[in-house]
Image (cartoon, rainbow, N blue to C red; front, side, top):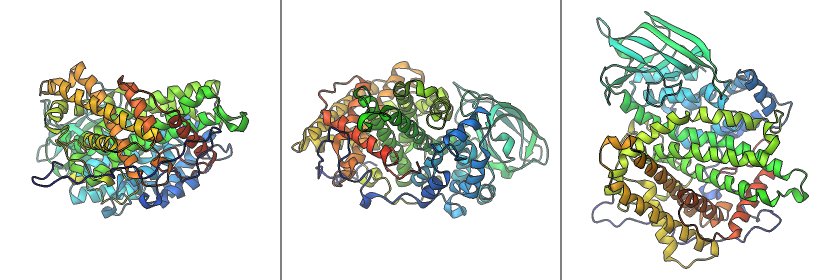
Length: 607
């Protein structure tokens, strides 16, 4: 979004925070104000999400067939919980993954993430296994498929079926990405598929596969094509091999898959020949934002467990002082992760031509932050973290599930391969030059245009979030500080702008070739860049709420977020007012007492 010649960019955010709030009382009670976003900015919790939350019920009720105890027992037996799968089928959850113009419910990804959070808050394996992987498989067809392919896949999902994805092989592969399928031209036209995969989710529960098949012996961007196998083949054999037992997500069903001389007609080709890598880069932006935007709900659940552990049998249900930093800090990280994920999800609808790098940065940064948070919460839980009962049994399960849900190191490597080669161009052409994006990019719940998969690109020369960081820091510095928290926020924002300047100098010196993808220095710079972007997303969200009377209008959470990011970067932090931690701690305690989600939305929960 480069500024148009002769047109002065319009500031995207208000130039001054319109209100401030008093520090939280010493007893930890929250100030008398709304949680989450101001009603004027909130599109409301989607009714489908509220219905699903209510149907899943209180997760701490030992008699609830969809509660923690039932889900942990199903995980112990390495089976999907049958009762909960039946409930999800009754709610036609698969229709959430079908675009609205094809008869489904998918209009924008922010709303989809909110619909899925009640499920992911309870069980990541169920969230993946029941259907969200069907969306990831179908996304390439929604992006480049013809009308008949789109209609056929929509019918499978609307009828309650599943779609499995057969990934191409990549470097740093785990079992999910190891080995591949090749496609050769068939006599008379079409393709013949041969090959195997070590692990394909739901391979034993569907006949519909989206296959990223090698169609060229040469490596490069034209090496693979996308082929749709819509059911049992007329010729050839599809063999489901033995089930693969994963260290996490044990209830999800992974099986080996082998294709022997499977013949497909020319109409099976999605898009153009050799377009597989390009389609992956375009369509995988959805998973890059949606995975973090749903998985963080699981960490929300663990933070809730930690608050319970830290406050039970305590005077006034207040945690011991030694846990204040961990509880408030992890809550701040969750808000930071949500700000970045929601910004990415909204960007895919609002400005899909510029969301490519942002989506990769979301997926690149958040798994590490969430893993660090789990380590902090493990210390708070102590021995309770090993409990297998209904109150604390979800912790060990999430600790196992999270690395598999994020595809571990391989998922990081894929996003790294997107970000690192772009750093020299960003430093030379985009940073301190790109125009600030519109404010509604950072207004969760505000209406979005329908997601248009075909507009997703795998290029872009502007940096939406870096421009926001620079502009927000300028606005904060240009005005007298209303409170010590505002002064601290201005100082931290300028510190992070200084980090971006340093990144510009160091990244501009990198060679403008793909070899930077394996350069340790370039990878370290990508780590720092992604953290800077997460700070920018938080500033954008905070500014968007500055005139409201909600917790997120208070600079306290933004100060705590930016101070934690600056410390991770090794940047100078200075003195952070004590009220930042006090205010954030009071909010997390209050939300837990009143059963509200620990994300940006603060929505009511079943328990």
